[in-house]
Image (cartoon, rainbow, N blue to C red; front, side, top):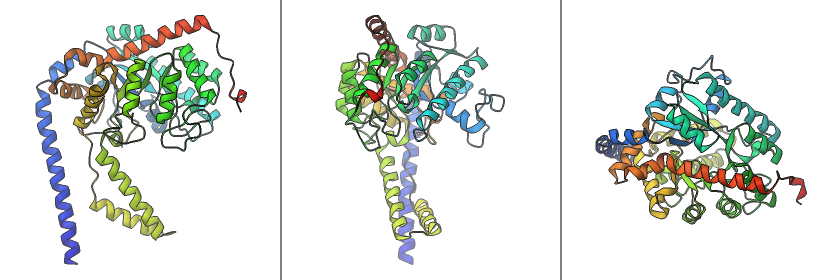
Length: 428
Protein backbone atom coordinates (compact mmCIF):
# COMPACT_ATOMS: atom_id res chain seq x y z
CA UNK A 1 0.00 0.00 0.00
CA UNK A 2 2.80 2.41 0.92
CA UNK A 3 4.63 1.52 -2.28
CA UNK A 4 1.54 2.30 -4.33
CA UNK A 5 1.04 5.61 -2.49
CA UNK A 6 4.69 6.52 -3.05
CA UNK A 7 4.43 5.72 -6.74
CA UNK A 8 1.37 7.91 -7.17
CA UNK A 9 3.05 10.72 -5.25
CA UNK A 10 6.16 10.63 -7.43
CA UNK A 11 4.04 10.50 -10.58
CA UNK A 12 1.98 13.45 -9.38
CA UNK A 13 5.12 15.38 -8.43
CA UNK A 14 6.66 14.83 -11.86
CA UNK A 15 3.44 15.96 -13.53
CA UNK A 16 3.26 19.04 -11.30
CA UNK A 17 6.87 19.98 -12.00
CA UNK A 18 6.33 19.57 -15.73
CA UNK A 19 3.25 21.78 -15.54
CA UNK A 20 5.10 24.44 -13.54
CA UNK A 21 7.95 24.39 -16.07
CA UNK A 22 5.50 24.73 -18.99
CA UNK A 23 3.69 27.62 -17.31
CA UNK A 24 6.95 29.40 -16.45
CA UNK A 25 8.21 28.99 -20.00
CA UNK A 26 4.90 30.30 -21.34
CA UNK A 27 5.00 33.34 -19.04
CA UNK A 28 8.55 34.13 -20.14
CA UNK A 29 7.58 33.75 -23.81
CA UNK A 30 4.60 36.05 -23.30
CA UNK A 31 6.91 38.66 -21.78
CA UNK A 32 9.26 38.41 -24.77
CA UNK A 33 6.35 38.63 -27.24
CA UNK A 34 4.77 41.67 -25.60
CA UNK A 35 7.64 43.82 -26.90
CA UNK A 36 6.57 43.02 -30.46
CA UNK A 37 2.79 43.06 -30.07
CA UNK A 38 2.19 46.61 -31.33
CA UNK A 39 4.35 45.93 -34.40
CA UNK A 40 2.46 42.68 -35.05
CA UNK A 41 -0.86 44.54 -34.93
CA UNK A 42 0.46 47.16 -37.33
CA UNK A 43 1.46 44.42 -39.79
CA UNK A 44 -1.95 42.73 -39.56
CA UNK A 45 -3.68 46.04 -40.19
CA UNK A 46 -1.70 46.51 -43.42
CA UNK A 47 -2.76 43.29 -45.19
CA UNK A 48 -5.85 41.08 -44.92
CA UNK A 49 -5.06 38.30 -42.45
CA UNK A 50 -6.50 35.10 -43.93
CA UNK A 51 -7.60 32.31 -41.65
CA UNK A 52 -7.88 29.16 -43.73
CA UNK A 53 -10.49 27.30 -41.70
CA UNK A 54 -13.16 28.23 -39.14
CA UNK A 55 -16.12 26.02 -38.19
CA UNK A 56 -18.48 28.64 -36.74
CA UNK A 57 -21.20 27.55 -39.24
CA UNK A 58 -21.05 24.03 -37.78
CA UNK A 59 -21.34 25.44 -34.26
CA UNK A 60 -24.43 27.42 -35.24
CA UNK A 61 -25.98 24.28 -36.73
CA UNK A 62 -25.40 22.15 -33.63
CA UNK A 63 -26.20 24.77 -31.01
CA UNK A 64 -29.16 26.75 -32.35
CA UNK A 65 -30.16 25.30 -35.72
CA UNK A 66 -28.59 28.27 -37.57
CA UNK A 67 -30.82 30.80 -35.78
CA UNK A 68 -29.22 34.22 -35.30
CA UNK A 69 -32.30 35.11 -33.24
CA UNK A 70 -31.08 32.63 -30.60
CA UNK A 71 -27.33 33.34 -30.77
CA UNK A 72 -26.02 36.79 -31.61
CA UNK A 73 -22.61 36.65 -33.30
CA UNK A 74 -21.64 39.80 -31.42
CA UNK A 75 -21.15 37.68 -28.28
CA UNK A 76 -20.65 33.90 -28.07
CA UNK A 77 -18.83 33.91 -24.71
CA UNK A 78 -21.87 33.40 -22.47
CA UNK A 79 -22.62 29.86 -23.60
CA UNK A 80 -22.28 26.70 -21.54
CA UNK A 81 -19.31 25.91 -23.79
CA UNK A 82 -17.99 29.16 -25.19
CA UNK A 83 -17.33 29.40 -28.90
CA UNK A 84 -13.91 30.54 -30.08
CA UNK A 85 -15.29 33.06 -32.56
CA UNK A 86 -17.45 36.16 -32.59
CA UNK A 87 -17.31 39.61 -34.16
CA UNK A 88 -15.47 41.50 -31.38
CA UNK A 89 -12.79 38.82 -31.13
CA UNK A 90 -12.38 38.59 -34.90
CA UNK A 91 -11.80 42.35 -34.87
CA UNK A 92 -9.37 42.10 -31.95
CA UNK A 93 -7.49 39.36 -33.80
CA UNK A 94 -7.30 41.57 -36.92
CA UNK A 95 -8.81 38.87 -39.13
CA UNK A 96 -9.30 40.38 -42.58
CA UNK A 97 -10.39 37.37 -44.65
CA UNK A 98 -12.11 34.34 -43.15
CA UNK A 99 -12.48 31.03 -44.95
CA UNK A 100 -15.68 29.69 -43.38
CA UNK A 101 -15.74 25.90 -43.46
CA UNK A 102 -19.11 24.55 -44.65
CA UNK A 103 -18.44 21.15 -43.10
CA UNK A 104 -20.85 18.24 -42.81
CA UNK A 105 -20.11 14.76 -41.51
CA UNK A 106 -18.49 12.37 -43.96
CA UNK A 107 -20.44 9.48 -42.39
CA UNK A 108 -23.90 10.45 -43.63
CA UNK A 109 -25.31 9.41 -47.03
CA UNK A 110 -23.79 11.61 -49.71
CA UNK A 111 -27.14 12.85 -51.06
CA UNK A 112 -27.93 14.06 -47.54
CA UNK A 113 -24.46 15.63 -47.34
CA UNK A 114 -25.31 17.76 -50.39
CA UNK A 115 -28.43 19.13 -48.67
CA UNK A 116 -26.63 19.85 -45.42
CA UNK A 117 -23.77 21.56 -47.25
CA UNK A 118 -26.30 23.83 -48.94
CA UNK A 119 -27.65 24.71 -45.48
CA UNK A 120 -24.13 25.58 -44.36
CA UNK A 121 -23.58 27.77 -47.42
CA UNK A 122 -26.91 29.45 -46.77
CA UNK A 123 -25.71 30.24 -43.25
CA UNK A 124 -22.62 32.05 -44.55
CA UNK A 125 -24.73 34.11 -46.93
CA UNK A 126 -27.11 35.00 -44.09
CA UNK A 127 -24.16 35.85 -41.83
CA UNK A 128 -23.09 38.46 -44.36
CA UNK A 129 -26.66 39.79 -44.61
CA UNK A 130 -27.15 39.82 -40.84
CA UNK A 131 -23.96 41.80 -40.15
CA UNK A 132 -23.29 43.80 -43.34
CA UNK A 133 -21.15 46.35 -41.53
CA UNK A 134 -18.68 43.58 -40.64
CA UNK A 135 -18.85 40.89 -43.38
CA UNK A 136 -19.12 40.69 -47.15
CA UNK A 137 -18.91 37.66 -49.44
CA UNK A 138 -15.64 37.47 -51.38
CA UNK A 139 -15.38 35.44 -54.58
CA UNK A 140 -12.03 36.70 -55.90
CA UNK A 141 -8.72 38.06 -54.63
CA UNK A 142 -9.78 41.52 -55.79
CA UNK A 143 -12.95 41.19 -53.70
CA UNK A 144 -10.85 40.41 -50.63
CA UNK A 145 -8.66 43.48 -51.08
CA UNK A 146 -11.65 45.75 -51.74
CA UNK A 147 -13.60 44.45 -48.72
CA UNK A 148 -10.54 44.76 -46.48
CA UNK A 149 -9.97 48.34 -47.69
CA UNK A 150 -13.60 49.09 -46.75
CA UNK A 151 -12.87 48.01 -43.17
CA UNK A 152 -14.84 44.77 -43.32
CA UNK A 153 -13.97 41.07 -43.09
CA UNK A 154 -14.04 39.18 -46.37
CA UNK A 155 -16.16 36.02 -46.04
CA UNK A 156 -15.00 33.10 -48.18
CA UNK A 157 -16.58 29.66 -48.43
CA UNK A 158 -14.60 26.42 -48.24
CA UNK A 159 -16.19 22.97 -48.53
CA UNK A 160 -14.61 20.44 -46.17
CA UNK A 161 -14.81 17.13 -47.97
CA UNK A 162 -15.57 15.81 -51.44
CA UNK A 163 -18.47 13.77 -50.03
CA UNK A 164 -20.40 17.05 -50.33
CA UNK A 165 -20.61 16.68 -54.13
CA UNK A 166 -21.92 13.07 -54.08
CA UNK A 167 -19.72 11.94 -56.99
CA UNK A 168 -21.18 14.61 -59.27
CA UNK A 169 -19.31 17.28 -61.22
CA UNK A 170 -22.65 19.00 -61.79
CA UNK A 171 -23.05 19.42 -58.02
CA UNK A 172 -19.44 20.68 -57.85
CA UNK A 173 -20.28 23.36 -60.41
CA UNK A 174 -23.41 24.43 -58.54
CA UNK A 175 -21.47 24.70 -55.27
CA UNK A 176 -19.02 26.99 -57.06
CA UNK A 177 -21.89 29.11 -58.35
CA UNK A 178 -23.13 29.47 -54.75
CA UNK A 179 -19.76 30.85 -53.69
CA UNK A 180 -17.57 27.88 -52.69
CA UNK A 181 -13.98 28.70 -53.60
CA UNK A 182 -12.12 25.72 -52.16
CA UNK A 183 -12.96 22.09 -51.59
CA UNK A 184 -11.04 19.81 -49.25
CA UNK A 185 -10.76 16.67 -51.36
CA UNK A 186 -11.59 14.30 -48.49
CA UNK A 187 -12.49 14.54 -44.85
CA UNK A 188 -12.27 11.46 -42.61
CA UNK A 189 -13.61 8.86 -45.06
CA UNK A 190 -12.11 7.47 -48.25
CA UNK A 191 -14.40 8.33 -51.15
CA UNK A 192 -15.23 6.46 -54.33
CA UNK A 193 -12.52 8.56 -55.99
CA UNK A 194 -9.98 9.69 -53.34
CA UNK A 195 -8.17 8.26 -50.31
CA UNK A 196 -8.54 9.99 -46.95
CA UNK A 197 -5.97 10.14 -44.15
CA UNK A 198 -6.91 7.81 -41.32
CA UNK A 199 -9.12 5.56 -43.44
CA UNK A 200 -8.26 2.51 -45.50
CA UNK A 201 -6.89 3.51 -48.92
CA UNK A 202 -8.64 2.14 -52.00
CA UNK A 203 -7.12 4.04 -54.93
CA UNK A 204 -3.45 4.65 -54.06
CA UNK A 205 -4.38 8.35 -54.12
CA UNK A 206 -6.89 9.53 -56.74
CA UNK A 207 -8.95 7.39 -59.08
CA UNK A 208 -9.41 8.41 -62.72
CA UNK A 209 -12.64 10.18 -61.77
CA UNK A 210 -10.78 11.87 -58.91
CA UNK A 211 -8.30 13.28 -61.42
CA UNK A 212 -11.24 14.64 -63.43
CA UNK A 213 -12.56 16.33 -60.26
CA UNK A 214 -9.23 18.16 -59.93
CA UNK A 215 -9.30 19.21 -63.59
CA UNK A 216 -12.86 20.54 -63.28
CA UNK A 217 -11.96 22.43 -60.10
CA UNK A 218 -9.10 24.05 -62.05
CA UNK A 219 -11.48 25.05 -64.83
CA UNK A 220 -13.95 26.54 -62.36
CA UNK A 221 -11.31 28.35 -60.32
CA UNK A 222 -12.03 26.36 -57.13
CA UNK A 223 -8.91 25.78 -55.03
CA UNK A 224 -7.82 22.19 -54.38
CA UNK A 225 -7.44 21.74 -50.60
CA UNK A 226 -5.35 18.74 -49.59
CA UNK A 227 -5.75 18.79 -45.81
CA UNK A 228 -7.19 15.44 -44.59
CA UNK A 229 -5.87 13.50 -47.62
CA UNK A 230 -3.24 10.76 -47.75
CA UNK A 231 0.24 11.58 -49.06
CA UNK A 232 -0.59 9.57 -52.20
CA UNK A 233 -3.69 11.72 -52.79
CA UNK A 234 -1.61 14.86 -52.16
CA UNK A 235 0.98 13.78 -54.72
CA UNK A 236 -1.61 12.76 -57.32
CA UNK A 237 -3.50 16.04 -56.98
CA UNK A 238 -0.32 18.11 -57.31
CA UNK A 239 0.64 16.07 -60.37
CA UNK A 240 -2.73 16.65 -62.06
CA UNK A 241 -3.53 20.24 -61.09
CA UNK A 242 -2.65 23.22 -63.26
CA UNK A 243 -3.33 25.68 -60.41
CA UNK A 244 -1.72 26.05 -56.97
CA UNK A 245 -3.01 23.77 -54.21
CA UNK A 246 -3.64 24.66 -50.60
CA UNK A 247 -3.64 22.93 -47.25
CA UNK A 248 -6.30 24.84 -45.31
CA UNK A 249 -5.32 23.47 -41.89
CA UNK A 250 -2.27 21.20 -41.68
CA UNK A 251 1.13 21.17 -39.97
CA UNK A 252 4.54 19.62 -40.65
CA UNK A 253 4.66 15.85 -40.28
CA UNK A 254 8.39 15.97 -39.54
CA UNK A 255 7.56 17.62 -36.19
CA UNK A 256 4.28 15.87 -35.38
CA UNK A 257 3.61 12.53 -37.03
CA UNK A 258 -0.14 12.95 -37.38
CA UNK A 259 -1.40 11.44 -40.68
CA UNK A 260 -3.16 14.70 -41.57
CA UNK A 261 0.10 16.66 -41.50
CA UNK A 262 2.27 17.31 -44.57
CA UNK A 263 5.41 15.21 -45.21
CA UNK A 264 8.58 17.08 -46.20
CA UNK A 265 8.59 15.73 -49.76
CA UNK A 266 5.04 17.08 -50.25
CA UNK A 267 6.15 20.43 -48.83
CA UNK A 268 8.70 20.60 -51.63
CA UNK A 269 6.07 19.62 -54.20
CA UNK A 270 3.83 22.37 -52.83
CA UNK A 271 6.62 24.90 -53.32
CA UNK A 272 7.14 23.71 -56.89
CA UNK A 273 3.37 24.05 -57.41
CA UNK A 274 3.38 27.61 -55.96
CA UNK A 275 0.82 26.50 -53.37
CA UNK A 276 0.35 27.20 -49.66
CA UNK A 277 0.35 25.30 -46.34
CA UNK A 278 -1.84 27.02 -43.75
CA UNK A 279 -0.47 26.08 -40.33
CA UNK A 280 -3.16 24.97 -37.90
CA UNK A 281 -3.72 25.04 -34.14
CA UNK A 282 -5.16 21.52 -33.75
CA UNK A 283 -3.35 20.26 -30.65
CA UNK A 284 -2.57 16.72 -31.82
CA UNK A 285 -1.32 18.14 -35.13
CA UNK A 286 0.91 20.54 -33.19
CA UNK A 287 2.39 18.54 -30.31
CA UNK A 288 3.93 15.09 -30.80
CA UNK A 289 3.87 14.62 -27.02
CA UNK A 290 0.12 15.18 -26.93
CA UNK A 291 -0.45 12.91 -29.92
CA UNK A 292 1.50 10.09 -28.26
CA UNK A 293 -0.31 10.68 -24.96
CA UNK A 294 -3.70 10.07 -26.55
CA UNK A 295 -2.36 7.06 -28.43
CA UNK A 296 -1.28 5.61 -25.07
CA UNK A 297 -4.67 6.41 -23.57
CA UNK A 298 -6.46 4.71 -26.44
CA UNK A 299 -4.21 1.66 -26.08
CA UNK A 300 -4.98 1.44 -22.36
CA UNK A 301 -8.71 1.70 -23.05
CA UNK A 302 -8.48 -1.14 -25.58
CA UNK A 303 -6.67 -3.20 -22.95
CA UNK A 304 -9.44 -2.55 -20.41
CA UNK A 305 -12.09 -3.45 -22.99
CA UNK A 306 -10.26 -6.73 -23.58
CA UNK A 307 -9.88 -7.48 -19.87
CA UNK A 308 -13.44 -6.50 -18.93
CA UNK A 309 -15.67 -7.39 -21.88
CA UNK A 310 -19.32 -6.49 -21.30
CA UNK A 311 -18.43 -4.57 -18.11
CA UNK A 312 -18.70 -0.87 -19.05
CA UNK A 313 -18.73 0.29 -15.42
CA UNK A 314 -15.41 -1.46 -14.71
CA UNK A 315 -13.89 -0.02 -17.87
CA UNK A 316 -15.11 3.45 -16.92
CA UNK A 317 -13.66 3.14 -13.42
CA UNK A 318 -10.26 2.08 -14.74
CA UNK A 319 -10.24 4.91 -17.29
CA UNK A 320 -11.13 7.46 -14.59
CA UNK A 321 -8.22 6.20 -12.52
CA UNK A 322 -5.87 6.39 -15.52
CA UNK A 323 -7.01 9.93 -16.29
CA UNK A 324 -6.47 11.02 -12.69
CA UNK A 325 -2.91 9.70 -12.77
CA UNK A 326 -1.97 10.94 -16.25
CA UNK A 327 -2.38 14.55 -17.30
CA UNK A 328 -2.40 15.33 -21.00
CA UNK A 329 0.46 17.61 -22.10
CA UNK A 330 -0.70 20.89 -23.65
CA UNK A 331 0.45 22.21 -26.97
CA UNK A 332 1.61 25.82 -27.08
CA UNK A 333 1.74 28.87 -29.32
CA UNK A 334 5.50 28.35 -29.46
CA UNK A 335 5.02 24.88 -30.95
CA UNK A 336 2.76 26.33 -33.65
CA UNK A 337 5.58 28.76 -34.42
CA UNK A 338 7.96 25.78 -34.58
CA UNK A 339 5.87 24.31 -37.41
CA UNK A 340 6.06 27.64 -39.25
CA UNK A 341 9.82 27.62 -38.71
CA UNK A 342 10.12 24.11 -40.11
CA UNK A 343 8.12 24.87 -43.25
CA UNK A 344 10.13 28.08 -43.76
CA UNK A 345 13.38 26.16 -43.39
CA UNK A 346 12.20 23.54 -45.90
CA UNK A 347 10.63 25.68 -48.62
CA UNK A 348 10.63 29.37 -47.60
CA UNK A 349 8.05 31.84 -46.29
CA UNK A 350 6.32 32.30 -49.66
CA UNK A 351 4.27 29.12 -49.16
CA UNK A 352 2.98 29.56 -45.58
CA UNK A 353 -0.38 30.75 -44.26
CA UNK A 354 -2.50 30.31 -41.13
CA UNK A 355 -5.51 27.98 -40.70
CA UNK A 356 -6.56 27.95 -37.07
CA UNK A 357 -9.54 25.48 -37.15
CA UNK A 358 -11.29 27.53 -34.47
CA UNK A 359 -14.68 26.15 -33.42
CA UNK A 360 -13.85 22.87 -35.12
CA UNK A 361 -11.81 21.53 -32.20
CA UNK A 362 -12.54 21.27 -28.45
CA UNK A 363 -9.20 22.51 -27.09
CA UNK A 364 -6.48 24.85 -28.30
CA UNK A 365 -2.80 25.54 -27.64
CA UNK A 366 -1.80 27.70 -24.70
CA UNK A 367 -1.75 31.27 -25.95
CA UNK A 368 -4.11 30.67 -28.89
CA UNK A 369 -7.38 30.16 -27.07
CA UNK A 370 -9.63 32.08 -29.49
CA UNK A 371 -9.55 34.19 -32.67
CA UNK A 372 -8.41 37.30 -30.80
CA UNK A 373 -4.91 35.85 -30.33
CA UNK A 374 -3.51 36.03 -33.87
CA UNK A 375 -1.40 39.12 -33.04
CA UNK A 376 0.33 37.10 -30.30
CA UNK A 377 1.41 34.47 -32.83
CA UNK A 378 2.79 37.13 -35.17
CA UNK A 379 4.55 38.83 -32.25
CA UNK A 380 6.22 35.49 -31.51
CA UNK A 381 7.39 35.27 -35.12
CA UNK A 382 8.78 38.80 -34.92
CA UNK A 383 10.66 37.76 -31.77
CA UNK A 384 12.12 34.86 -33.75
CA UNK A 385 13.51 37.20 -36.38
CA UNK A 386 10.90 37.19 -39.13
CA UNK A 387 10.81 40.46 -41.04
CA UNK A 388 7.60 42.52 -41.40
CA UNK A 389 7.51 41.74 -45.13
CA UNK A 390 7.79 37.99 -44.43
CA UNK A 391 4.89 38.25 -42.01
CA UNK A 392 2.75 40.15 -44.50
CA UNK A 393 3.27 37.22 -46.86
CA UNK A 394 2.27 34.68 -44.20
CA UNK A 395 -0.72 36.76 -43.10
CA UNK A 396 -2.25 37.39 -46.50
CA UNK A 397 -0.06 38.05 -49.51
CA UNK A 398 0.68 34.36 -50.10
CA UNK A 399 -3.01 33.44 -50.10
CA UNK A 400 -3.85 36.33 -52.41
CA UNK A 401 -1.18 35.08 -54.83
CA UNK A 402 -2.61 31.54 -54.76
CA UNK A 403 -6.12 32.85 -55.43
CA UNK A 404 -4.98 35.03 -58.32
CA UNK A 405 -2.99 32.21 -59.89
CA UNK A 406 -6.04 29.93 -59.69
CA UNK A 407 -8.22 32.64 -61.23
CA UNK A 408 -5.78 33.04 -64.14
CA UNK A 409 -5.71 29.28 -64.75
CA UNK A 410 -9.51 29.23 -64.68
CA UNK A 411 -9.80 32.03 -67.23
CA UNK A 412 -7.48 30.17 -69.59
CA UNK A 413 -9.16 26.78 -69.17
CA UNK A 414 -12.67 28.20 -69.58
CA UNK A 415 -11.57 29.60 -72.95
CA UNK A 416 -10.13 26.21 -73.95
CA UNK A 417 -12.79 23.71 -72.91
CA UNK A 418 -16.44 23.32 -71.92
CA UNK A 419 -17.64 21.95 -68.59
CA UNK A 420 -16.71 18.31 -68.14
CA UNK A 421 -19.37 15.75 -69.06
CA UNK A 422 -17.54 12.91 -67.30
CA UNK A 423 -19.57 10.73 -64.93
CA UNK A 424 -18.17 8.44 -62.25
CA UNK A 425 -20.09 5.62 -63.92
CA UNK A 426 -17.91 6.06 -67.00
CA UNK A 427 -15.17 4.19 -65.13
CA UNK A 428 -15.07 0.56 -64.06
